[in-house]
Image (cartoon, rainbow, N blue to C red; front, side, top):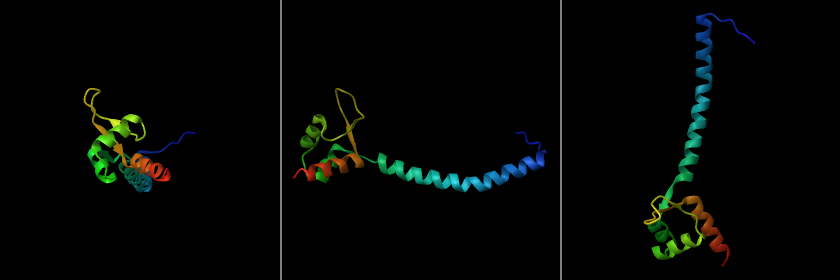
Length: 99
């Protein structure tokens, strides 16, 4: 399919597409940004310990045992773990269900 448009028609078409689709894409982008922000909000070991009213050592042992998912943003020699809100919620629900 070939469209033979003069420059004015092409510009008009581009403006219609831009004005019609831009709000849709902006809304979608804002929705996705909210989801990503919520999913990527991470807590330090100290934050998790404070929320669970545990010691940092206990939180670290749960992370190292694999019971609590965490990302190491440090090095192997000096780990710096971060726990996502979603992973903490999942851990908490599993922990509470076990009681």
